[in-house]
Length: 168
Image (cartoon, rainbow, N blue to C red):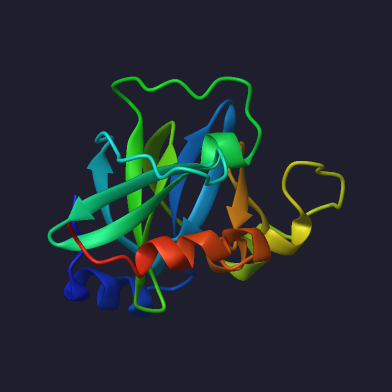
């Protein structure tokens, strides 16, 4: 699935903010749809030696070396197995392309500001500084992740180095 500029402009003009909803374990998370470049089935990646376990490796996406982060490992989930629902969400963050591996993608939801509440500070695996808040839609609760802050944290500096590698 690929999002064109026309799709992104239509989203920008819509009332409320749109979020791509993905799953990690039993929880649903949301990231701003405007940061999503495309959604791909999980492809094998090339592992880079001496990188943290949550960096799955790199893949070559149309001539661009893309670092791939496994959010299931980053969020310390007990099982991070690859199955037919596992996908890679390709993000464009300030002209840097990064892939994130998640258990699955379910839909796109529009949330108005009154549907987003501040996140309580109790998580040991994901600091609230990386959260935009908790979104509620009907009976669903979404953990809204500020993916740029998460992927710009100090421990992610290795991603910058990987992204600067030249394609082989």
